[in-house]
Image (cartoon, rainbow, N blue to C red; front, side, top):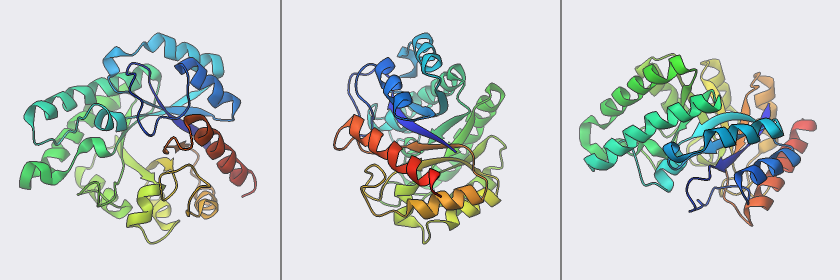
Length: 274
């Protein structure tokens, strides 16, 4: 398994609460490598304003992979959702969605994550689910030939609807029935929707859809600052043969550098002793 950090790209000066590491992007990536990360999950705010060449040079310099590109900041910072009740916002979100896919391709990222960026099914009425099925199927048709697969993240019931649990996510994927769609399991959201630290991962792996994992405590702080049983989770992931990225997507508390460093050390120690 590979350890990654969720890192905001530099085109937008407003930093999100989950943006890890401080300094320029090159300085961020240098710290990530120094502190033992294998890669990063890049989170753009506007994919069209990113200096792709500069980022690729820094990634190569520090020998870091891009495990995924995340869409979280398209909603958190840019205020866009695919199922917005405002047509103008929904249209801009759709445009940015495809631009994020293009950015993922340019970074060599195999995955693009979709969590809160999808919005709520209920925000557009009874047809919300079907509308999202059409959106995600068309996007997967576009992304798969580019070498980018899409991963849906179940979001807890207080922040989302429609896809709130691993079982619900797998049922949705079966309904869409597209080879370019998989699942991202986030441990923070798990605490509100699941009954076990281990069964969701086993279920998704058995279905062949466990493609990405976010690690965060029940309070969204870095691992080791909450209640989650990461030892059991990591043991299960090892037993079922998960060998992809584990991304720390956490609040930058007490500060962006400490949150990143503490989480990396904590998870790396568990991996070494599991």
